[in-house]
Length: 257
Ligand SMILES: [Zn+2]
Ligand SMILES: [Zn+2]
Image (cartoon, rainbow, N blue to C red; front, side, top):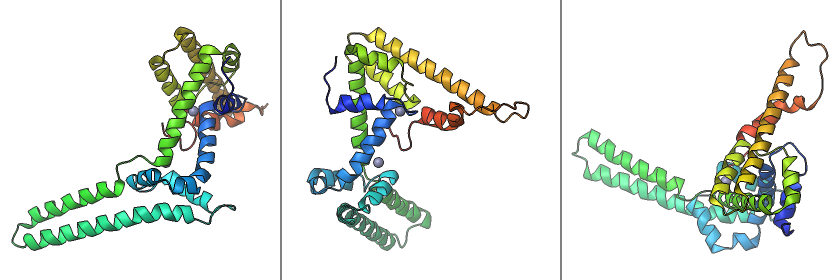
């Protein structure tokens, strides 16, 4: 039996029913916890984290918006943490755009006698440089953190499958993983030292095949509901068929692994 701690308890929780892949459930839960955490003084004042935010020129589209919404929910500091992150980024953007502006002016000055084609090419180079500067080099720090947690959760699930008979039973009755998480877990299993490699693979493939079969049946039932000749319409799980197939094929909204 694997020792119970916050991570294993969170994992067991995610396996308790529901129509969402357990790793996707953990992803969403981690994201919900992460947003307010990023706005605490502890993270906000951490120079390493601030550097990451600057490196990524803020956060990705999803996390810029989610963090903004979190910053304006009651109980927060009315956007102060958000503004502090963005102040750094905006300062750098201003430096970069001014740099490009003077580069262009210099080209214009030096190249007054130059063929216009050559001049345009040189100016285009400065645009490319600016584009790269505006994009930044780092991955969105929120996405990076969520990916790390996702890898940790996946590793713990593998360990639980390897060592915990009780958990294997729970897993066998679960709906399995979404496609991105299934691919990720079978890759990680092959790179992990486990005692029961073949058994784990068999379990993963058994549960996943059963899940795909179930989704196929749900879709067939759902489509059948639109058949005029089919009078007796049932109201089972198939009502959710499209929602289930969406989350199965691509994972939960915002998943980036
Ligand atoms: Zn998933
Ligand atoms: Zn992100």
